[in-house]
Image (cartoon, rainbow, N blue to C red; front, side, top):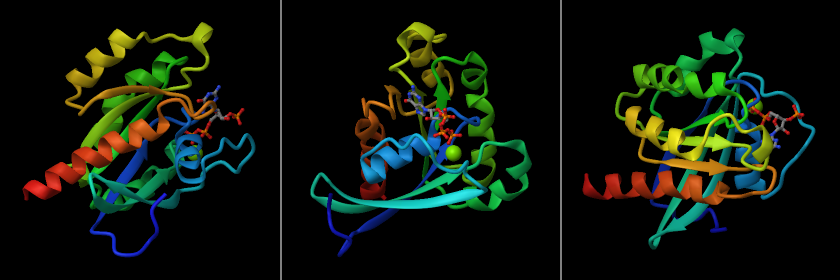
Length: 178
Ligand code: G3D
Ligand code: MG
């Protein structure tokens, strides 16, 4: 992990997706390197940051973990403002969360039209309970105009770094071209 000093860019990245898909678990895994079974349900919004060097440039990931529950919807607009990217997360074992991915992108785009999104299928450790296969996930990511599709497990840590790096790297390249 890089130190905080002298970073060149801050990327505001949203954790999006229905309740209980694993947004908080993913961000905790990325920022603290562990899976915590018991923590409070996210209330409104929780900010996290992690400093990283990507292709020789120090960046700050500013991660905004929003609450998926409908009763927090009124607050979300202001948290979404100025976002550059988002991890649109669904639970591989619950199809309804997959079908809702589009709604999350629409909601975020209202506030941040230029944001980039990666589609994340979480809980890939629960192989027997899976309702979405990889091919379907990849097709959905294309249909939604996402920069990619990745399957993760916040429980085992599988692909979690890769998911955040993929969006960080894409944002960095975009930034360098501006
Ligand atoms: P949210 O922030 O999207 O609402 P949470 O989701 O991070 O709170 O996770 C919801 C539940 O799913 C939690 O279980 C959490 O432990 C579990 N979970 C998160 N990621 C994974 C994963 O990759 N694999 C498995 N097997 N479980 C995961 P509880 O039981 O605490 O509600
Ligand atoms: Mg949460």
